[in-house]
Amino acid sequence: MFPFLLFLSIFTSNSSLFAAASDSIYDNFAYCLTTNGISSGQIAKVLYSPTNSSFSHVFEAYVRNKRFNTPTIRKPSLIVTPSEVQQVQAAILCTKGSELQLQIRSGGHDFEALSYVSSVPFIILDMFNLRSINVDIASETAWVQAGATLGELYYRIWEKSNLHGFPAGLCPTVGVGGHISGGGYGSMLRRFGLTVDNVLDAQIIDFKGRVLDRKAMGEDLFWAIRGGGGASFGVVLSYKINLVRIPEIHTVFRVQKTQEENATDILYKWQNVADKIDNDLFIRVLVQPVTGKVKGQKIIRLTFMASFLGDANRLLSVMNTGFPELGLKKSDCLQMSWIETMLWWYNFKIGTPKEALLRRTLDSVIFFKRKSDYVQTPIPKYALESLFKKMVQLGKTGLVFNPYGGRMSEIPENETPFPHRSGIIFKIQYSVNWENGDPNLISKYVGEARDLYSFMTPLVSKNPRQSFLNYRDLDIGTTDDGKNSYNEGKVYGLKYFKGNFDRLVKVKTMVDPQNFFRDEQSIPTLNLQTSQGSKGRK
Image (cartoon, rainbow, N blue to C red; front, top):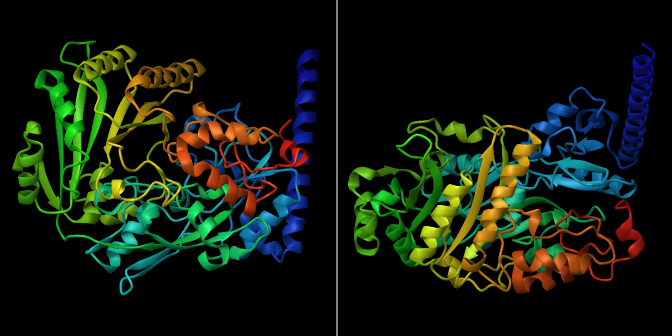
């Protein structure tokens, strides 16, 4: 019995120490909030420590990747859930006075969980309560707060008009703050460009706690938070967006092909037309290893998913002229409104009430790994065949091909931090999902995605090999915020931003010289003070 009692005593003692430390951090932070004008009644509603019974629920509500919610992953020391701007300002100022790092979360869909995980003690500033949306059809604009979801934004636009939309993502639970600031895209990107190509103004809180709009922050910072990632520069409160005019009727289709149905030739032709076909047409391709007719046999299946700004007759005319190889028939086409296409893309059943877009939670949370690439030259047929064999061999990782061209290729690379413009045929997302938290499975499937990424090296962009910021991937480089942070940041920075990286560094140095807003892939500063940069990282 003695060893057990000794263990119990040690466990109880450590638990008590943890609780005491947690309470101390909470008390100090709460006191700081009061000195910055936040009442005790407000504090009780917005500040959570690990000893609070609601802490786990608040933390897990916006965890979208179970890889980052295992027992070995460090949890935040505090979570702040502001409902007023003054509370955000106070949280920033109080974090500055602590030994903790600030992580900013608006939706939790960041693929490497940088908004709610860190290697050092940290606080989550969770923006989900700040989600007001003000749509003004007369001016064809809207102000939307960072904590709103894309689904909520689309629904509020639809409430006011069925002839207006916004060119953003296809997953309704994604948070607006991260999506827009990272250069979010959707099925209308070939006609209207990215989210950041349709942003008119913004509000951000800097490291001094000041609320700045476009005029106050200046054009350099306004440029940076339209594709450079807002969390490197401050806390983005809201964006003023330009609504786009859309037709009343949209058409979608989903067509599948296997290798037995000439999939290789069809995909090769898709590469040669997807970025050049009518700008109203967006054709995504899912390339997936699936079980074939023979038990245990894997085959490659292509799923062509498309959205068209117009009716089925015009779509068929466009397809018959530009991409007849797919063999699209009128019976493949579904006509619907723009808001209904948003439900369709997320695999809701036809006829699902539009209120489904207001749901902020997921039906299930999975384990996953994502990576990205860009293709500038069509992949030859022989290489596509080799790719299919490799995917069948690996067994689970799929690819998503997203076409560019159109408006995307017309905008100069330096117009926003997002540089992947002219010359890009399509973007690749590497995607692997699983449901079991066994560490061996995590290692297996993450390794599988990395293996396929390595295989693709000769077929994708080079010097640099480009990556998409909103598909965060820590494999391509990280910084530990020390004296070498610029050189470390340049490794991933050139992949995400190409020639725009150094301008982002200059803006960062100007607006946040002490590198208060940081994470493992943030924009570094120049002339960073070693003592400040090393703080909390050893």
